[in-house]
Image 1 (cartoon, rainbow, N blue to C red):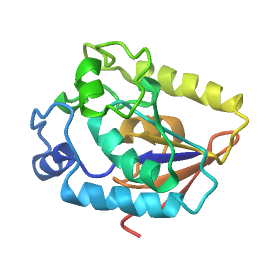
Image 2 (cartoon, rainbow, N blue to C red):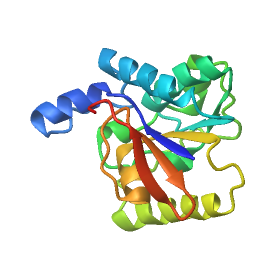
Image 3 (cartoon, rainbow, N blue to C red):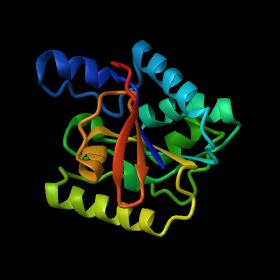
Image 4 (cartoon, helix red, strand yellow):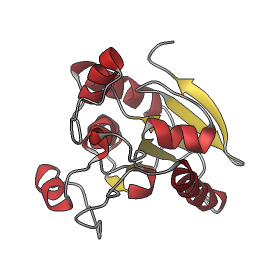
Length: 184
């Protein structure tokens, strides 16, 4: 299994400059974020990937797109791997609008409002990560799936604090190894 942190978003740029929430809902990737997504796609396209699963946030969908194109695979959606609800950027886009913006993606039965109404506690994040880890424990497709996710979810799952565009390989027991970081 691989976990890919989305590329740099508009939120990431502004927040890193000020450490103040700039109030951008469901931000898009920056030009650098698109480059990071392309770089990650090049790395992952050399691996035996059979599925691409992304969080429903725009930045995750934009990050997953180059890999889906390179491999000729659809993007599956899983809100379980979304970002921790803490900043304004963690307000998602309603499913109807996502369907319009991404007509080639099957959003299945994703509720119209799929993100939490308020801030998510550490305990809630850890419960979500534990549910995902339990799902991985039963998985039979290790090494064949890429999950396009977010900083807090990846940290909660692996303990790693990764930069935008980083690819982490997960092995059974949730052992995590960084296989690509744009900064290395």
